[in-house]
Amino acid sequence: MLTTRQTTRGSTSTVDNTDTSRRMWLTALGLLGLGAAGASSGILLSRRAHSVAGERAVTATPSAAVRAPLVPTEVQPPGVALPTFITPTTDFYRIDTALVVPQLSRADWRLRVHGMVNREIIYMFDDLRAFPLVEKAVTLTCVSNPVGGDLISTAMWTGYRVRDLLAAAGIHPDADMVLSTSIDGFTAGTPVEALTDGRDSLLAVGMNGEPLPINHGYPARLVVPGLYGYVSATKWVVELELTRFDKAQAFWTGLGWSAHGPIKTQSRIDIPRNGQRIRSGPTTFGGVAWAQGRGIRAVEVRIDDGDWRPARLGASYSNDTWRLWSYQWDAASEGTHTITARATDNTGAVQTSEEAPPSPDGATGLPTITFEVS
Image (cartoon, rainbow, N blue to C red; front, side, top):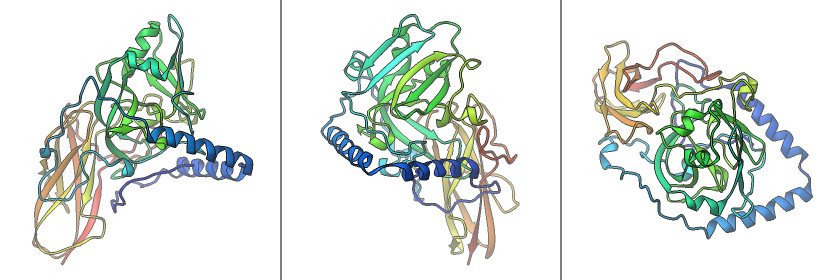
């Protein structure tokens, strides 16, 4: 069943706010799957879910050998109630193709690394302890996210560097893609470079100081900074095949989506909400901006058709996480107004105003909110 979970917001955009075909297709699959499920299967699934949930409840997350920097309070701009820098696990968005959430225990889990490698390796969960456990804050984004949408969240992940797991198998120099497979059959094609360079892509086993939630991939999933989830964020991952983009095709790329999926420079307005009525006088607006892998240099705001003005940025934590911003405005003129935002990343690239839907490689455009001053 397709599920999304995130804080409810009223953001709108001049770009279509849904990727209708993709989400309706997933929803239809979910309904068909639920309708076909028999009573006996439901009982077995319920028992297994109880068993895996019990295992997770008593599983301790070990301390990371490589700790992430502490999150400074300065990441939150003062005077405005923005989302917290680290998203609470219960609010973290969820998008996947699982008709029923897989129930996989650590004892049953295996990770097969094969394909264009010097030697095939099958890792058991305990084998991972031979590698350093790494803690890293990463913002994940879904390619289905419309301009100004909420399919984006940040967590503190703990896991093992994928490059270490692959290096033990020996990568063939001609391999340019890793085809990851979930226990439920979902596949994602990720550039080898993204899994082996310095961004510290993780086989994550923990999230926000706890074992991965079952619906976020327990016992292990991929977390790859800088790429949309459809090409990288495989949950319940059990297989990594070294291959080539010209020889293999992943789930969503087989349906016409772009093969590589780098995240675009984007921003969002959280305050005010669309249609919100505010009192005249000084007020503070705010939101978030992101360009994972590059980081955010600036956010600008425009009221109505006025000039672009610089917003105040919260402290930058890393290039792989979002950045919060605020803007103070004197609401002196009553009536209907709009606020538009745009971000600039650390390469100097400015968020484009050209409007495009999520398909095939991520939505573009500028978020715009309409509000009332009285």
